[in-house]
Structures are given as structure tokens and as C-alpha cells.
Amino acid sequence: MNKKPEAIVFFDLDGTLFNSQIDVLSSSLEAIKKLKQNNITPIIATGRTPCEVFDLMKKTKIDSIIGMNGQVVLYKGEKVFTNDIDTEVIDRLYQYSKQQTGIALSFYNYEMMRVSQDSQSTQKFYHFIKEQVPPVDDQIYLKSPVQMLLLLCESGEELYQDVFPELTFIRNTPYCVDVFNRGGSKGYGITQLLQNKGFTDVPTYAFGDGMNDFEMFLTVDHPIAMGNAVDELKEKAEFVTDTNDNDGIAKALQKFGLI
Image (cartoon, rainbow, N blue to C red):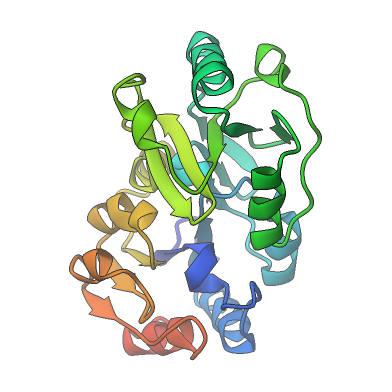
């Protein structure tokens, strides 16, 4: 088998590889299996952390991930890149949240997750994504590198925009906002992977549905939007496939001749 893949396909999770029941369709599992047989590398590209999707990676046999919206890149288990947030910036944001907004935070790196408090908004978000609430430790950022924060709220993120110009704020679900270094994105993580591994000449494809997939669509050769994607993303797509509940991934991979 060639060391360099014939192509690389990046899969967003929520609303894309996951159906509306937060599961993977059997048609998608079979398609991923065929990709690997064809020397095409499937890679997860998600706002979630590697430790959150360990079981999924085991189920799909996908061993590479662009995690936390590009803030960590693991290729076949090897750490290729991390984009740590400065401790002083995190401390300012935490103090601002505690004193000004009351919004709870999550602290993520590629090996662990912690929350600042177990609040109603914390419970609501983790119930929404069908995960257990992580342990509470509001000092974790003083002890471990952090690559992404979450604001656990249904509104109010606009208050942070002017106060923290060094950070990017992207609403990823109705109950949380992803926060990471300005300039970081799934697209930036993909660029780091391709450059570090010498894959800049490998054809790239990406599936997505939300605004945190926007930079990824601008980075890859062939952006593919799910039928359930937001309209702004569909406008940037080369092709709009069927929905995440109706075999959209398998249908598009067949159309592009990848399986």
C-alpha cells in the first residue's frame, strides 16, 4: 500500500457523519470501509475533542482527526499539531465570565475535558450531545494546556467579541459557543496536516453542514454540503448531497467515484 493516500476525505460529525440520532448510518460505515480499501484516507474534522470521539473512531476504524475545530491534528495516532490558548487570555476570559456574564465554561485539550461549574446550562448542553458532564475543575487551565473553550449558553457571546479580539467565537450548537485562537479553524488544521505530512498534492474532499465548516470548505479541493446544511455553507459547496439521515455521505462518495 502506498504511504501517500490517493485522496483524503474529511468528515464533520454533528449533522454530517452523525445522523439526527447522533449515530452513524450503516451506509456511511460501509462507505468508509471502501475508502480505506481504495487507499483513500478518511479523517474526522470536528469541533469535538479526540477523547470525546474515541468510541466513534474505534467503531469507524478512522484513526486520524482534525479536532476542536483544527486546534489539534492527530494523524494515525501521531500528534502533528496543537494550537494552545495563552493561559493569561483564558484567565481573563474566565474572570470576565464569572464577574460579568455568569456563563459557564468548558476547558478542552486533546486528552481531557473539564467544566468550570455544573450548572443548568452545562447539563443542557451535554444532554443535547448525549455525553456525561465532565468533572468540575475551574483551575485546570493553570495546570494543563487548553486548545479550546466552550461558552455554555444560548445567547450572550456577542459580549465577548470586542473584549477578546485575540479569540474566535463560533456558535456550534444552540447551547454552546466554540472559542479558540483567532485564525484557528478546521481549514487551518487541515493546512497544517497537509504541509507537515507532505500531502499538499493529494486531492482533498470535505463533508459538512455548519458554519464551523466554512474555512474547511475554502481549504479543500472538493467541498460537499449535506442536504441539511445551512444555506451559507451550501453556497460554498461544489456539490450538495442528500441529508445526514438519507445516505448523503455514501451517495456523494459514489458520485465522485471514491467508492
